[in-house]
Structure formats: structure tokens, C-alpha cells
Image (tube, rainbow, N blue to C red; front, side, top):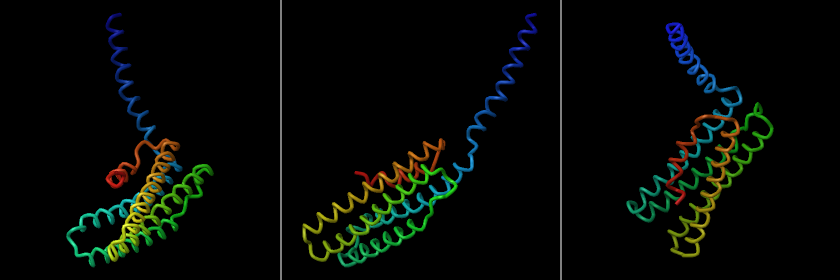
Length: 185
């Protein structure tokens, strides 16, 4: 009898060790809606990460360039933000997603677009400040930059919320947060 109990325990242990990983695998498999969202999120992530790289590069060059070069760089970064805003507007929210998810993602796009537009305008203010050293223009630069950051942060937060609603275990938002984190100060 004791041997039978031992075998039953061993058999159950083996069975559980086989079943438990299968249930974990089943939970990590993505459904079509999750995969569709991840594809959309990937496009948004790449766009935001490259936008933050523009700011990083500009900050690295500050102090290493002449004022004229920095002025031209600010105008170039402004153009890049305008381009990214246009690219963002061309990214379509997938129709395969539920209506409430589509609506949330449209709001994400709107917030990110406003953020990129504010950053675009902040670069123009920065260039104007470099040209004339007007404190009012500098204050406007800071205000627009901060507003842009707030809108982008709000859009990224909403994007993460949608990922949670869709029960997506891990998303690219971690890499976005890393690229974005230093600009939230």
C-alpha cells in the first residue's frame, strides 16, 4: 500500500510538471486582437523612440556647436518632428480591434500628435531664442516643450492602459519608457 501511494504521488508530480508549463504556454499565446495591437504599438513605439533620439542628439550637441550650427540643428529637428507627426497621422488604427479599443487608440494618436506638434513648435521658439536672446521666446520654448512632453506622456500612458485591457503580458512600452524617461524631469 505504501508503494502504491508513493507511485501515485510520483505520478501526480510528473503529471503536474507536464501540465503546469502547458497552462503557462497557453496563457502566453497571443490572440489575433493582441497581435494586431502589438503591430500597431510597434509602429508607434518606433516613431516615439526615434523622436526622442532627436532630442537626445540635440542635447548632446548643445555646447559643442556654434550658435549658428545649433540654430540650424533646431530648425532641422523641428522639420523632423513635423515629418514624424505626418507619419503618425498615416498610421491607421486597426479596424479588427473592438470599437472601444479603436477609440482609445485614436485618442493615443491624437495625444501623441499634439505632443509632437508642440515639440516641433518648441524647436522654432528655441531657434528664435538663439537668434535674438529674448527671454519671453525662451519661456515659450520651455512651455511648449513641457506641454509636448505631457501630451506624449499621456499618450504613452493610454497606450499602456490599452495593452493592459487586452491582457498583453509584455509590450514594447518598456523600451519607450527608457527612451522617454529622461525627458520627464
